[in-house]
Structure formats: C-alpha cells, structure tokens
Image (cartoon, rainbow, N blue to C red; front, side, top):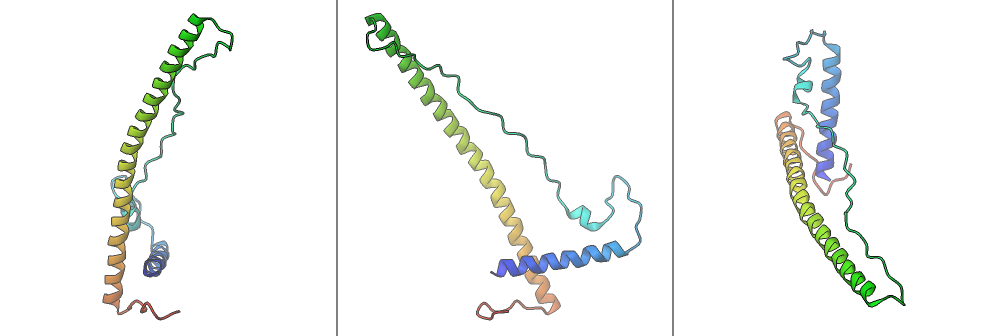
Length: 141
C-alpha cells in the first residue's frame, strides 16, 4: 500500500513538474541536448521484435492399416520411432531455450524492481526533506 501511495505522490509530482515546464519559455533544442530535463531522464524503450512462428520439422509416421504386410509394419515402427525421437528432441530444445529466455526476462524484471525500489526511496527521502511524512500503516485516509 505504501508503494501505491509513494507512486501516486510521484505521479502527482511529475504532473506538477510537467505543468511548470509547459509554462516556461521554450528554448530551441539541439539534437545533442533534449528540450527539457524530463526528456533527458526518460529512457528509450526498444521496440519488441515480432515473435517468429516456431514449428518442428518432424514427419509423422503413416499408419499402414490393420492388414499391413510385415515390411510395412516394420517401416511404420521405424518411422514412428524416428518421429517420437524428433518430437522429444524438439521439446527438449524448446525447454532449454525457454529456460534461457526466463533467465533473461528475470534479469529485466529484477532491474525494473530495483529501479522502483530506488525511486520509492527517493520519494521517501524527498518527503522527509520537505516535511511530508507518510501516513502510518494503521491510519486510513
């Protein structure tokens, strides 16, 4: 709940700051310097690449029927075994790639959480400096 209040206060502070910047005279921006300090603090968000359609290349074994010759049955057994091994290998490879993707995603989640924690500490410190204390947990607004 404190995080929500802290983030709410931060958004209010950001809204006030953007109004203050909007009221000041605009200065021409050069490509090397942003027009406002808020623009300088905003990180660039990379565009997410489109996810490719992933499909295995395994070939299903074709059932020869109940009244098949012995050679057709043996061929089916071999093709069935190859198809089963191919699917297992594909699934194992996808699981390995998934684990690597999860590890990378967790790194991004952890970085985001660290940024939120840093920002919350900044707001708490700012509230202490300005004399605005957070309401106690048992108090309700």
